[in-house]
Image (cartoon, rainbow, N blue to C red):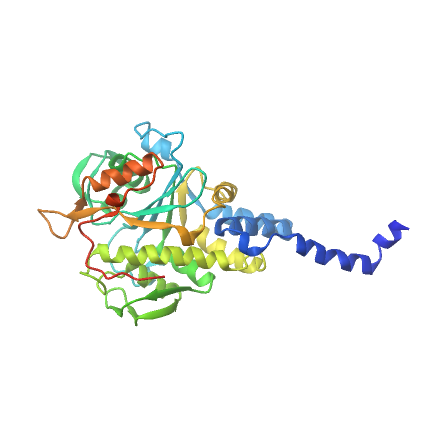
Length: 369
């Protein structure tokens, strides 16, 4: 009798809602886990086509073997130091980026650099911005043309990327900080714009009018929903705020990063496989990572380990810097504040208040999200 009831229409119609109720509430999911699970569901639902989609997305991601590129001269990885991720925003003016109004500078530079520290236990992340105009000592690296690039002092931080690529940026950050970087992720201009458009825009609030003829951004004080083009203008704005230096722009970049992650988190990606694929396709096309993250499977595993972190609780800090005495248009790390900051990250300790103070701040009044 039970077998007959199982095959009837009414019995089947009662099962479907049960499966939906078994799904965990959406608000308990974290942003990266949403993305990972959505990709898995997309593959399973599409069958053979899903495998093709997965392979297509997987093939989009470019990987760099950091151990091979950097060698053994790296900081020690402490057993309780958490995870450290370097996020780079590259501003190449070639290819799909050429039409984005980003200027006519030859080559590519690292327009944004963030060291994201995830404490042991995955509780609350910290993002440290490194001003691109910071004068640093570049270690010996392999140049993009394959030649050996000698070490050099007092070079602009963002020039390291243009001369030697992301692996040398990782090496530079590790040597200036003593922090062992576990992974790096790079996203270019076109991918950033496409990601924002794919999710339907991002909400930001600014506390003053911003009119920047250089980036094209034109906003009045208040709340705005930015599309991809406006978002790119927002994170690149420097002349419309503060003293026009890179330091004023950093506050906008940090604000936007949290707003973007929060927007992805609150969207129902599981309810829209089409949107999920569109987002994943846009993102993976613009991604370069270390070889440890250079596949959807590895990205999903890393994402699951970040499940307990809420973007809204992320602390954002600018590396303490001061204006260079020889060139006021450049900055250098302010000591001992900078060393205290890096030490706290290395040892996975609470960051002291003194390590968050920067003598040079760019004269910006700041924004809120």
